[in-house]
Amino acid sequence: MHAIVDSTNDIARALAEEGAPEGTAVLAIEQTGGRGRQGRGWISPAGGLWLSIVLRPSLAHDAWPLIGFATGAGAAAAVETVTGAKTQLKWPNDLMLNERKVGGVLVESSGDVAIAGVGINANVLPEALPEGVRAGATTLLASLGRPVDLAALARAVLEQVERFYDLVREGPEAVLDAWRARSFLTGRRVTVAGAQMFEGVAEGIDRAGALLVRTASGVRPVRAADVSIREAGPA
Ligand code: BTN
Image (cartoon, rainbow, N blue to C red; front, side):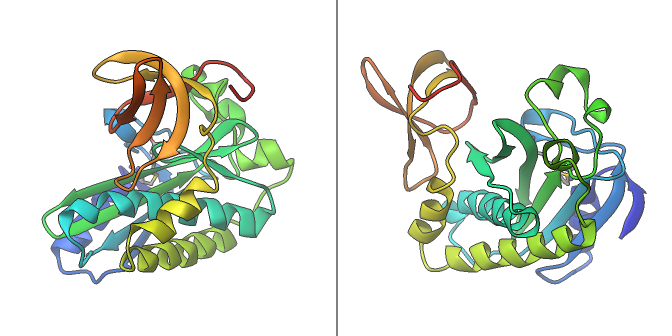
């Protein structure tokens, strides 16, 4: 456990380069240079769970995107085990609680190593979140009205990510099905902002983890984009 680091993903990467075995975990109380998806920053004050795991997947490279889905499914299951609160996953891997983002997953890979980073706004006051994301974000503390046991949450994340990561070796379906059972977007009208911008109804994810969006001209697979809900209820 580190006190303050730039990014636990960077520490985990450095350890992996020194030969750290699969499963090596890095936790920090605070990150000053936390990273989110798509080059964004990730504000990481004390009270959150900032955790990275060294993975050395013995998988074909085209199966590596499943690591993100396994990590997301594991993080969601862990929050649920420790708090009893039902969590969902917003494609590609936002952890959602009560319609708001409570955490996220960032898997960074190079060579034979993948670093699975999990960030959960656990015992964080909502005011500590950046103003720009506050409306769509929450923390476990704010949603549950009580602090969670961070050590228990860290243990549960490690256990559950390992469980789903092990399942990846058996093929994509078990992990994708677990992920689909928690899908936040399925059945909802969404706006996709990627290489192109369009609207449609999210239908779930395919075997490669692409989000399927039904539009007037057919179903489009989305591999990289920001997806937002167009309206509050189901489409
Ligand atoms: C996202 O939703 O954009 C992903 C956020 C991932 C944040 C975690 S916190 C632990 C690890 N270290 C980082 O710098 N990022 C990930």
